Amino acid sequence: MRACDPCVETKNVCPKCLEALTEEQVETKLNEAEQKKKEEEEERQMNEFLKTLKERSRRTVKRLFDKGTISWNNDLQTFQDEEGKAITLHYRQGFGDNKGGEEDSDEEDNDDLD
Image 1 (cartoon, rainbow, N blue to C red):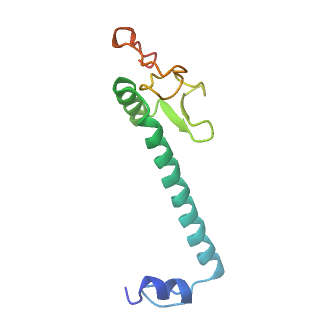
Image 2: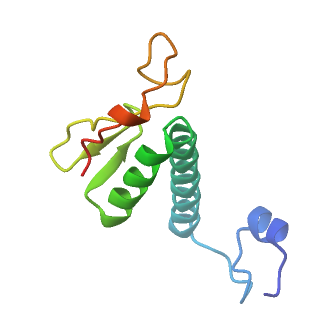
């Protein structure tokens, strides 16, 4: 690097060779930065949602998400299976679908995810 980040941004030059960037290159760089910011925000929202789940559901969701059998729908703020259907989850006390704030009993903790 021959130029610092603030100089690169203000002068629109390559940090290595100091040649001026074309408008297309600058636009692409901005689009990539916006996309990265959007992905980070979606990941943050997904992690916040995971905190509301019971441990068993959280581990199941993480395992299936890593496998690629479910995906995060940021618009609906839920996980969906390959067919686009929302999956059944168990929430911690005071979160999610528990209207009365009652926690699911561990004896009846049947995950429909397996």
